[in-house]
Image 1 (tube, rainbow, N blue to C red):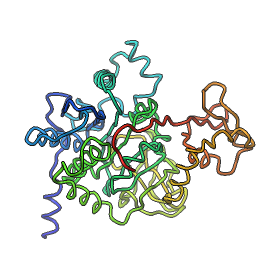
Image 2: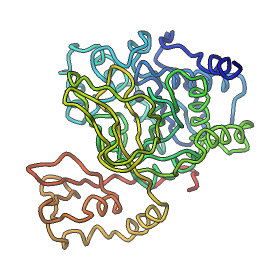
Image 3: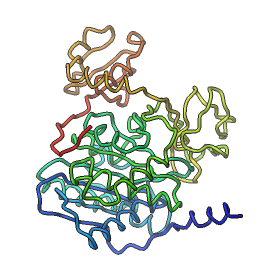
Amino acid sequence: MEALAAEAEDRRITQGVHLESRVLCDYDSGRPGPLFLIIGGMHGNEPSGVLAAQRLAESLRESPVPLRGRVLALAGNLGALRAGVRFLDRDLNRMWAARELEDVRAGRDGDAHAENTERRELLTAIESAIRTAPGRVIFLDLHSTSADGAPFSLIGDTLANREIALRYPVPVILGLEERVEGALLEYFGERGHTSIGFEAGEHTRKTTVDCQEACIWVTLIAGGGLEESAVPRARELYTLLRSSAAGLPGVVEIRHRHHVDPDDRFVMRPGFDNFHAVQRGELLASDREGDVLAPEDGLVLLPLYQGQGQDGFFVGREVRRFWLRLSRVLRRLHLELLLPILPGIRRNPEHAGGFLADPRIARLWTVEIFHLLGYRKCRPIAGMLQFSRRIERPPTGGARA
Ligand SMILES: [Zn+2]
């Protein structure tokens, strides 16, 4: 009975938040330092990031801190947040591919979808903040999941992203952005900014808001905006995150995404939390074609338990710290210069610094080698695998890895 009462108490945030303005928090200390750009509620059924940013604003109003730089927190999809749904017409977090943004900047995007206005307003706010930022830009995108489970971060694998994400005592997920096109993380990553997604737990849990809030403060510390000693609750915040993710691997790489089309009639089987271990061939879901099985042994991430969305589930696998250390050394030695001597691999004439790999010749470990050297797998062209170099800006903040 007590457990039930605690559960009811825990689940008390409701979807559909009241918001008058997109700006949730704007705190500029006037001291030089990074721009911390935070977005909550990019998906309207994920209010926890908005609530956490509002808590941050309140806390900074009541007790100012000696921040270096500026914190700007914005609400993502205002219309969908008010309605309490993931999106109204189109997923706002799939609308940031470079070619689409060209249309927005040229005024050709139109008003066919409610989200076009949201994107225009956000893009203007983001680009104006970046333009006036004197130093490093650190982007934090706050999300939550339809399944239960521990918090985790999502990054493109640059050393600058790792430097911050490895400071959160929760798992870091690599390679998800390679499998979803047009996410806002990609927009920041392509410009060489530090960009981190944070999935804080199930959409409506109160602890999800607590984890988002902890993530924001830890980011301010890890990004060199605040000394840990300036945050009286720092220890408590680290403990909250650490205990929420106890026993989970430190780094997981995504190896499989199950794509869902709206008429697939996809239904995830009940009982899969984030990081649920599965074996190859295990029944995970069903759709109009029949059973959907796990393609390999691994950990299930982001299983879809809501009506909207095109990612059915992901399967990932733990990456040992050894590989992270090795890749750091390889990247510093610029071993990518040796790539063109490997069979089946050549420079991409259309994309400076990029490579093409012929999957019929370069069969073994191709993707793994490119990942180690700091490359991102892009959309294949004419049967060739395509890789582009992730932009790595030297960190200018006071972060310690
Ligand atoms: Zn989301």
